[in-house]
Length: 138
Image 1 (tube, rainbow, N blue to C red):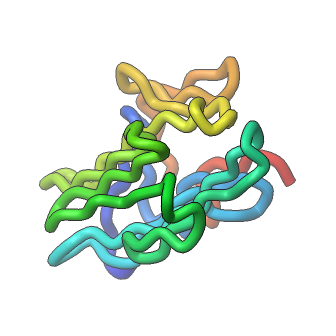
Image 2 (image 1 turned 30 degrees about the vertical axis):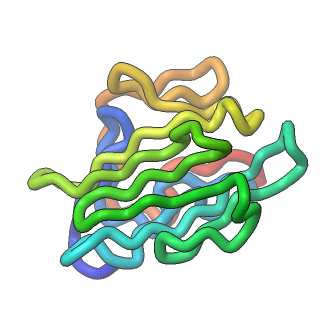
């Protein structure tokens, strides 16, 4: 993504980070474009299912029968078997991202402003100029 846009995950702000969250060295999500419309790329591991859900520029490339991405000009939402697992919205202050990957067996979700990673909660942090904001696993 070009330019400086803040990405908010819960109440945590990421500024000028190459990757917001990576798992095992793979970026969980990224935006290739914010304006005039959001384009998101995701790579979500689903350990309970033994698969990885992937989409490039809002288009699912794996599990197309069960994994869907709906996109509008300022909003992108991903669904697994009809349940919303990720919502990204472009707002004046930046892009807000909320998600819940627990249905996929991944203990990672946002709730009430917190980013929950297993038993840890991250609230009101600002991560700036990092290659990877949060790295999980090697």
